[in-house]
Image 1 (cartoon, helix red, strand yellow):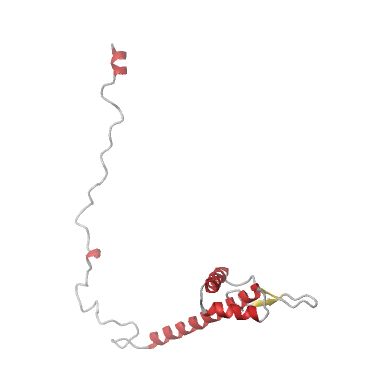
Image 2: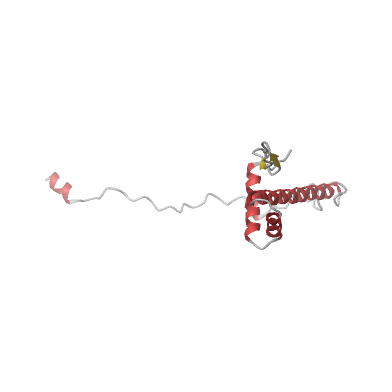
Length: 149
């Protein structure tokens, strides 16, 4: 199964032999790979050389783009596998205390625990930065003085 939707599907009919992209898979990742392919075609990169080589081999622009997207997808997969293997190897190594994830500092030995300045309590409630509300009513207006006489 192709997780990114970049594997070609057979869409042949009769004597016409063609392929199309799968609608399955992670559409967001497929979009990201498409943007990467378009960027590689626009700039002077090995991807552009590969794309032009496919065009010279007789492929249409869409077919050449599909080939480039598949090449990018394969490179991403190889990198993800390598990263996962490196993370697994790093997690299998024992830490300084003989256990995975052990640190040099122990909270059981270091009493009280190390407190950062952001962890300390504040001295009291914060002062209000808002201005006091102004009264909407004026004390004396010409209209009210004439009405009271």
